[in-house]
Image (cartoon, rainbow, N blue to C red; front, side):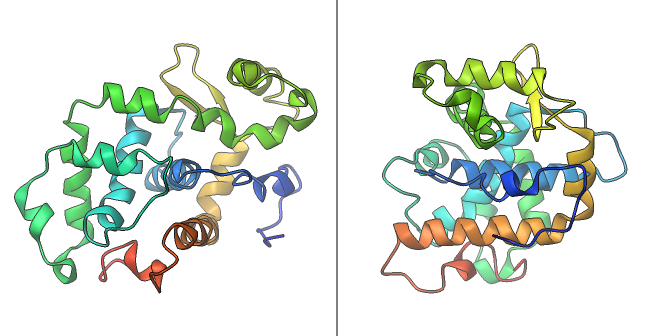
Length: 226
């Protein structure tokens, strides 16, 4: 099991199992996106993380490995198809990778945020927000039919929010997720270690999807940002 910074209040054993039974890159990107947004708002109350904001972050993280490194995300993954259908500023799409900076990625986020993302957000958020926190409720979900899992997880995350402390529960209007305050603090203070853990989990997944390509880790971020 991965050695996480200790916490007496949170279930870190479940945290270590978030990426079980993964068939595409969505869980890795969704969790990394949560980490990034919480980190960017350190010192503030994050409260609601909108699905559209999370979609922008997921696409931003995917953009370089897709367009520059041309990695396969797996046969069931639709993110490359989504990225191909969007419009980008020319300087971002064709700038040499050695010249890309964090400012360029920030500009990409702004570009994506102005794109029509309703359909992509609906597609990306159909399952991943629910399935990521499924390990928190394994006993209650045992034997449950797949078609009822999302609704059940939504109910359980709210019913057990204070006692079991899942990572988040769901906005009543289904526009996003609300991070548990204790998890928000943990994600913020342990950001670097958690980012490295989730990043290398994503690397392992992509390596399995691209067995003939070496050094996958160096192909996921521009050289100046690694």
